[in-house]
Length: 100
Image: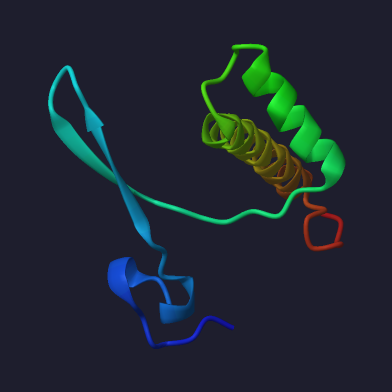
């Protein structure tokens, strides 16, 4: 259950996050983004370090953001698959367990 007491940005106070400002030099635009601390297993930490060392990513934050984008796409696809199965079942008249 989410507490009704909401902090900045509509998040409960216990979820309020510190922010970091980034300045994009080309546009001199300041971006404020929330920060999180994440605990990783030794294996995941090594994998993140490997990806950064390989040059594919500039830092661990880029790795985590990319991983979360991939997870988000997979979650959307999973939900779309479930919704499609529900809609097919409804069309057959079996979504509620009854037959037409």
